[in-house]
Image (cartoon, rainbow, N blue to C red; front, top):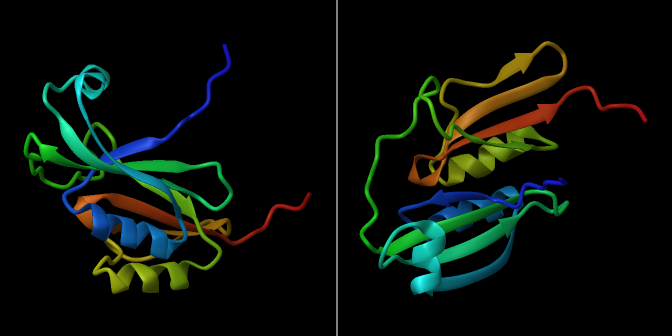
Length: 147
């Protein structure tokens, strides 16, 4: 059976701020909507849910994020995930210039959790805490693969 990753869904507390962060990093907004009704109750498994959503996509078309901000029921704030906690951990993106990506993130008040690391001579990478506490990994490939 063929399978394809469709998107990663992330609940946020400020949809507009989160869209601004990810579009500044280079993602494109594919669409926005407000959803509610029996079909969302069934699909999500949460009765009476009503949310504003946005679908974002990487420029290459291979990665999508679905962001949603609950109107009803109220969103439940949580503590941001720690690196060793079980569950959804991070969203990772490769970038051409990690310094430029970090400058963009900084304009949104998002900074590396600890700094920028170099993995062997292959990647420079870092984790930043984005809007709504989302951990975003940014990685710059140092050795471009030769084809």
